[in-house]
Length: 382
Image (cartoon, rainbow, N blue to C red; front, side):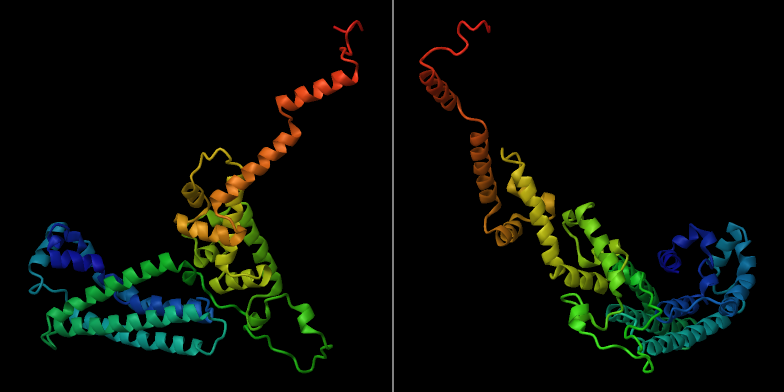
């Protein structure tokens, strides 16, 4: 619809006559698609056969408008040039029905969202996302009503009719930006089980010391939906990402990106790091980056790499942050660490491989001890 609006207002539609009524077929799909998206992601709803009833208006509209799609380009161009005179019969009714459909589904979507507020399986970040989507849809409904009033000559507000295109474009941009910055929101489906387990009062539970059964750092996640077994599995996956794939080298790595690689939520990833590593996300990533940097510096005693190159290699964006994190971990700057390691390696080599002076001194001492004669002289050994 955005594309068709662009062609209309720019007059490029006359260059593409087959774009006539291109988006009208989808007029009654806006509400149902968003409605079932909300039901699926908030109530874990499964599409049923009778839900096809929601698509019947779109089916009848397609049948009604299909003859226009069979027209030749010349006939469609004629309609475009004489749009007001040869307007499609029933156009006013389509506007009224679409407006009614949008209002009805806006109410249904809000009801689904309100109903989901009582569910504790939905994360706060995802709830904010759906609240914004619901509000965005309400704004679009209002903008379409303004557009319809103008088209039906109920109110003379021609400039406000452009709002519909602006709202639609803003909505698409917002979804695209969110998909890029918060991809896990599009994977969020509520768990089948509630976050707080239900205790059967008839079950006799022997007294246990909870402190002995719960890993360190897990107390603040007592109401989390993440089971301990799944937590251990995520820990192993996380270690694989850090040790084998070395994801910490990604210089713009975020908790959201790491969660996506683990195919879990941001909250679960943070919980796993806190429980099993007793640190936060940034501390864990810095630890692995500094460990990798130390390995590089220890194997680069000839200084073929600059410090900034090492920083970039292990995932830092600048030298200042790298130096600060490195010194916090080792109490030395990267340059000092490399020099210290170089001196240690030289001392080890000197112990293992004596110099020419040391070997000469050793030979002279042996000669004096043997009476100044060659031990192999006259022995027949050449």
